[in-house]
Image 1 (spheres, rainbow, N blue to C red):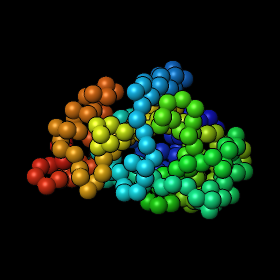
Image 2 (cartoon, rainbow, N blue to C red):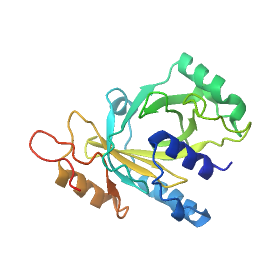
Image 3 (cartoon, rainbow, N blue to C red):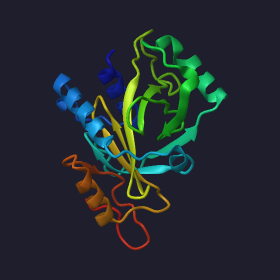
Image 4 (cartoon, rainbow, N blue to C red):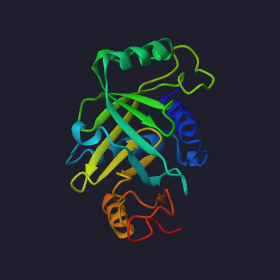
Length: 217
């Protein structure tokens, strides 16, 4: 399977969402998405210490709709035990072996059994390769030697108020903020406008902060 196919399957399983805009995904779209990742890498800002720990909640998406679903990403520093466990799960399914000891982050998404092991990639800060653990979530495992490394671009925005995460192959983009300080509606939309990624979809619709509705339908 290609990185595009694996990324699409993993995204659908992860978010339990079939509203991924797969009609726009083809060779030309993959090239466009890769260029968009390069664009996000301009003036990069990403520091692991500012990302790990407390959850990040997804409040806006592109090329995928979550609507009322409120889903969190949790970043953890890797440990020898974590890397060993994921490599034991996925080693025989990988089409290309990463340098396992070089893994820097583990991302758990939604339920804790959905996870992605990430490796800093060459290029701008926030560039990562990723191994999705497609065994841990209990679904039918992929074919042997079939899972390619996935590619992502991450970036912190507005004094680390927001985190953007883009899959460089399928083009799904997530804009997240800390749920203990949810962004104001206007603040979120101004950040979306600055990114210049076109029309997307509000997520976690209806969540409130202290004095306003987070997002409006």
